[in-house]
Image: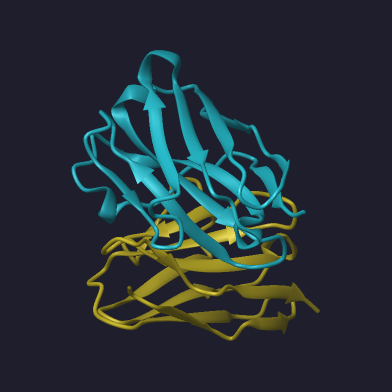
Length: 107
Length: 125
């Protein structure tokens, strides 16, 4: 199984800050990497697919980068509505696996 | 609007069975692979099982293989998860989720969009 490791597990940042979340795969997954955002009490919602492609309608302050084993989700200017937990998921092979999540809090 | 509505969750004793359902609307259900993903409240996400559009291909997480069976009825736009020999560590919120790719050939290259609201399964004596 491909293990996905996210860091940090949580962070607190101010509105307007640049926020970076990393995700590392235990083996190369090419660009088969998805990012989701989950708000409390809600189902996850995907943000980015194929490591770098932004979901239609998602704010442009979100961006993804990386290839192989190391990936990054960046929020260029954190907004109050960006609180929640972010998960990465590899779509390279079965079993489909997720990172442990990064909880983003607004200071 | 795509809508996925799960049902069938509840409190069940260890070793018993439960069948989850997911009613889909707002898209041509028969054209898309579907998945079940679970989440222990307050914890992370675990993919459970997937099925391709015409039921030719199913996959399971090792943790449920041999105990859970995924199926679908395209005529009823419905997805199912038959869960047998339930264990306390199966306790979770179970989400139904749609593949974003029409006629996906390989469900191992899949992700999930959108998700339902989830149905809670609690396995306890």
